[in-house]
Length: 382
Image (cartoon, rainbow, N blue to C red):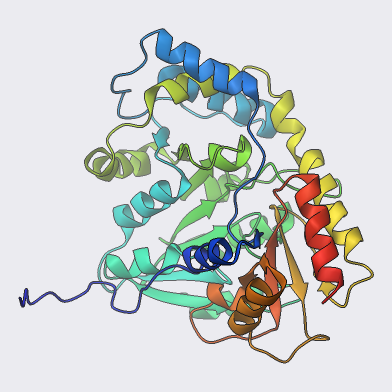
């Protein structure tokens, strides 16, 4: 039957994460491709969810999010960044970070608008921009340092530039934009009508003494920004899909117009549980050290391998260069590792719009130590 259906996303297929995880499962391979932990979250948090259910928090939460959770987020930003957030006018609880990103783009991007993104980029940005008629303007950043040339970015901006998207810390590169770079971005945007979407889902996973950075602490950026964060990465609960968006009152008002017809409200008992769990922020403050140990385990374990380790300042992903091992393109080499050596990774090329082969793979180290040791043993033999 012919439905005369024209795809809105004709160039979009199955994501690389699904492909590699499916291949990993078929090959019974160690899966370091998709970004999820293979260890459990804190039993205390699970108990708090059960208690919330028993208390009757099983119906719709308010559209903007449960008050206790919004209050907990406000406390976090005050304690960590020393900034005030209005829990009612500026903060909305969402069904994960990706939904918040989708909603923010839907809120402001119109046909013919241009959106600057930095590649390698999280894979939801470009399709969502295109879905709402926007034009993706990619800035290609290359290994090993993935440095941003802000002067070059300035040449791409014009009256059609509706939005710039940054991801800090960045998945997949592990790069962290420091305060100085954020101030440069603020100066670039000053005097324009361009908005900013700052994807900060890995904000509390930074290493080597680096402090968490948020555009919310830069006044010139905060006034024009959607700040997106997620509890999936923070609490080792990627399957719960709970995040939030902070934005100025005017932007939040428009954001919620889309949000209420997209999701309306988010999982109720988990919101109340997370709120109580975050009454003590020591867990949040200890997250960087927890993952830094895992990064170092993998990094140090591969020193005797033929892989070259790229810098990793944040997130729970490490990039490895295999140019001393093979001339194969990234996707083919990733498949070869999965099929022949039983270890699954992600080709960095999957995060670029145009074909880009740097012989680099992304490895997730949000895994048990024993999983990482197994990975090291496999990779050292290649």
